[in-house]
Each structure stands twice: as C-alpha cells, then as structure tokens.
Image 1: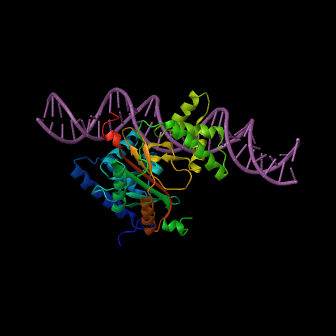
Image 2: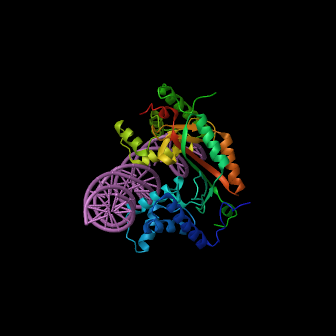
Image 3: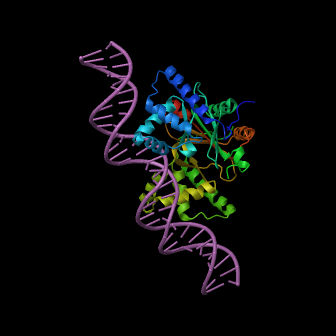
Length: 162
Length: 162
DNA sequence: GTCAAAGATGTTATAGTATAACGGTTATTT
DNA sequence: AAATAACCGTTATACTATAACATCTTTGAC
C-alpha cells in the first residue's frame, strides 16, 4: 500500500516543501517556462500550508515577508503555477494547493475535510476514465475534470482536531 | 436509451419550466418547507435560462420585473432552493442551475460546455459509488460530491454555436 | 381570536475573490 | 545594440457573497 491520502499531521513538512520546489524546477525546465523568484515564492508559500490557501492570504504572507505585492501579482503567479501543473485550484474553497504529481499530466480527485480543511489528492485512473467514458457517451468532449469530495478525514472523525 | 444529456437547443422550454415548478411544489410540501412567491420567482428565473445563471444576473432580472431586491434576497432564495435540492450550484462557474431530479436525493455529475455554457446533469450511480468507495478506502467520510467536467458539448463540437 | 415563537423579508454596509488596463522593466533573440 | 517577448508594478474596478439588524408574516398553542 502506498502513501496515505492524508499525511499524518505531524510529518516533517520541510521535506515536502524542498521536494516540491525541486520538482518545480525540473518541470519548468522541461516546459521551457521560467520559475522566477516571485513565482517560486508563491509556490513555497502554498506548500508551507498544510491546507489550501486563498489568494489574499498568500498576499498577506507576502506582505509579512516585506514583499509589497498587489492582487494581480499573486493571481499571475497562481495562473502560471496552474498552467505548469504545479498547483491545483480547489473550486469549492476558492483556494490553491500544491500538486503532488506535477511531473506527469493527470486528473485528480480531492478529498476536502470540512473540519480541518486539509485536502488529499487522489489520482485514481479508474474514476477519471469512467468519467471520460460517461461524458463521451453523451457526445461530450472532455477537457478538464473537477472532482471534489467534502467530508471528514480520518483524524477528524476520531475527534483529533476538536 | 433515455433523454440525451443535453437537450436539443430548440426544445419547448416552457414545458421544462412548468414541470420544474410543479415538481418544486410537491417537493416542498413533502419537505414541510415553504415555496414562497419570492423563492418561486427565483426558481422560475433560473429555469428560464438554458444555462447556469449567476446570483447578480438573477438580481438584475428581478429588477427588470419590478422587484427591487438586494443581494441577500436572492442569496437567501438560492440557499433555500439548494437545501430543498431544487437547484445545484456549479462551482466552476459560480452559477446556479435547476435540478432535473429534485424528487429524490442523488449525487450528480455535470458536463459544462466551455463554448455555449450549457450544463448537462448526469446521475451516474456507478461514478458516485466508486467515488465513495475510494474516499472510504482512504478513511474519509464522504458527505458531498462535486463533479464537474469542462469540455465541449456535441452541438458545439459540430460548430453549431459558432 | 390572541399572543408568542419561528420563519421570512427588507435594508445597509461590508467582506472576499478576481481581473482590466496601462505603463515600465527585464530577459532573450537576432 | 535593437527588437521582441515575457514579466512585473500600479491603480482602479468588477464580481461574488455575507454580516447584522430591523420589520413583517405565518404558524401553532392556548
């Protein structure tokens, strides 16, 4: 069995962040796109959270770090990161979260905990393929899937997050 | 084979609207909730569109009809209609659309055409059950599913909507 | 029927999310 | 070095949603 969908809340998150930044460099190089300092900062701030973070919360963090940015700055970075598959937007939260598998294209499914607000990314091909099949059966040409499941993660079901 | 996912754009939509309002009355009666004139108006305006409509567009339509409403009015109606399963919110559009099957609880999947902005509602149990299973396998207690697929509907693939 | 409680609506203000538009700067290519 | 494209700064504004509080209406108990 692989990694659990939700990492234990007490894992060493610095490792996640370093790994994500290293991945991002490789991906951008391969894509021929530029991971500028600003974009990298936004990506790092996203990864520093254990949960999806909103654009204006990111903005606030940048201000705290002395980077006097305006909304378009952060939205541009978010757009770039999405285009390069480095982050995902969680529609039901209006928030952004790091992608766990940026190195290959994939359709994801997200488990969104209503209590602790953490999100797990599934990458279940059976689901994405079944969705594609159903869409095609209706004559629909599928471009992008948004699959988000709200509920309670295992820890919150056990009452570990109050 | 049943109804097509996307109705032909030239069907008699007045029939859809009348049917939806009749359904709504039954559903609210069964739920013990009150379909007031205001809520009914919002539901009717939603059904008058062939595509999901935003809260502020609804507001504008109400103004055109001489009903001088403020945002909370329409949001309250939308909340009520959602609670009674009479409409769905399409997260990826920030817009609302009539539910095709309000009489029984169900998880839906939405096909969202990027060109004509129409939406088809699938109700595929195989998909919703597979999603639940995957979530549970991760120890996740599923409460609500959001499944939206963006792409092109059959008509738009044939260039019928320019 | 009256009255209390609950539910629904009106109103004002404000919070939260996102983009348009324009000008300047930096990097890349030739 | 000039031309181009990509990136960034800045201001203003559009779009989406809710808080808070007052008023009115419906319902149900007596």
